[in-house]
Amino acid sequence: MNEPQVWTLIGVFAAALFGMLTLMSTMFARLLNARFDSLQAQLEAQIGGLRGEMNARFAKVESQINHLDRDVQALAKRVFPD
Image 1 (cartoon, rainbow, N blue to C red):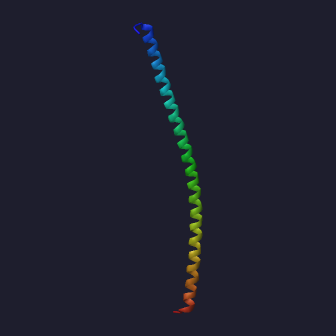
Image 2 (cartoon, helix red, strand yellow):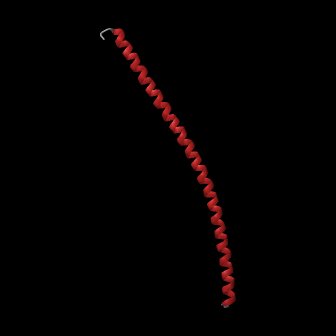
Image 3 (tube, helix red, strand yellow):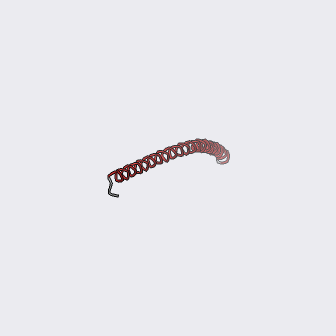
């Protein structure tokens, strides 16, 4: 264990090990980031579609309530004339 070549090889292998560890952790972080971005895009698309559908249904309910209000006012004028 006293020879310089052994210590050189240990240093080279340690540097290679840390280099591979750094490379793998960087690649894993990029992979996770890409997956989360994809998931976020899918969720935004689904929520946007749901928002549009809900707005359409709320508009329909509001329209029905307006028609009902108009009918009630017509009945009230007929039943309770001024």
